[in-house]
Amino acid sequence: MIERTLVLLKPDAVQRALVGDIISRFEKTGLKIIGMKMVNADKETAGKHYADDAEWLKSVGAKTKKSYEAKGIKVAEDELTIGKRIRQQLMDFISMSPSVALCIEGHGAIDKVRVIVGSTAPSTAAPGTIRGDYSMDSYALADSSKRPIQNLIHASDSRENGVREIKIWFKENELYPYTRVDEGLLYRKGK
Ligand SMILES: Nc1ncnc2c1ncn2[C@@H]1O[C@H](COP(=O)(O)OP(=O)(O)OP(=O)(O)O)[C@@H](O)[C@H]1O
Ligand SMILES: [Mg+2]
Image (cartoon, rainbow, N blue to C red; front, side, top):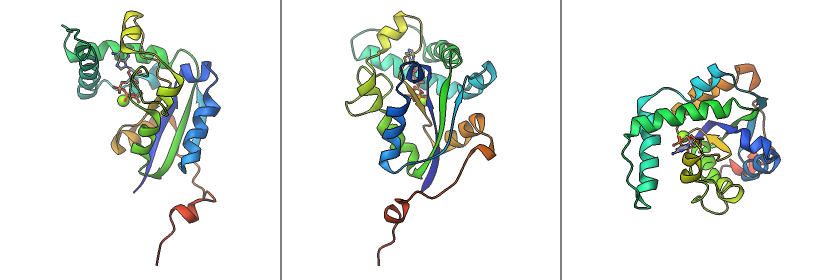
């Protein structure tokens, strides 16, 4: 099924001049860029993007706890408290300097982009993924520095969030449907 996903090259990707390398990884798979712009997010955009949603905040806290517990470290704080703290750090980070926002379209785009991006903590992200290849940041380093994990990319995690997030970053007339020359092969129907 053709899907659209919101990808942000966060301030660390822009400051480290990795924009071109990262974008080419998406392009080469066959995924189609239908929107792209540089944005210095204001507080309102940051707050909408990192929504004050209890479910998401708890999931961020739960992943954090799991990563510490895997190393035998007990975390006393509850998931929601951890999630709220990280949300504030993320909002400050995304508005610190420009990001590049992309709207990417293709069959199964949501999952495919997240496979290319890799898992949340670059320290354990697989080689070959963007986070695994271009960063070594970790939960421990981020937490001890009181900042979010700098993992270069945000990518929508569901179709529903994709629709929500694209509306935050792009106006309808900033998205450009067109045909890629390789679509005839990729979406070719057999006899
Ligand atoms: N324990 C933590 N300490 C610092 N930053 C964190 C922590 N957990 C998550 N983050 C930051 O919060 C972001 C959102 O967390 P989430 O669990 O949604 O990760 P993700 O889905 O892999 O990444 P993203 O939502 O950015 O695509 C992460 O990308 C990371 O930058
Ligand atoms: Mg996420």
